[in-house]
Image (cartoon, rainbow, N blue to C red; front, side, top):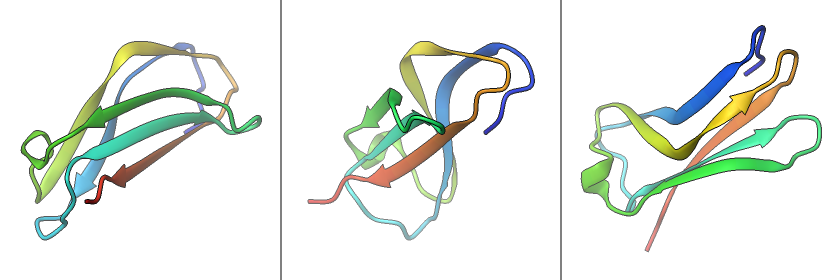
Length: 80
């Protein structure tokens, strides 16, 4: 994600397939250039991430974005 104007990232959004398993999900936002972790969010149960649709996991606090900065968003499932 590259930003052309200042703003804020408030959630990590991803598509969860209907047949995807796992016990919740974690989302992370990184600075592309440095690799620094800037923000993260977690849903500890599948009830918070129903399958077959887009899911938005809100960040605990909005992450301010800077013009010209590139961000990487990663989502992974929590497995038992």
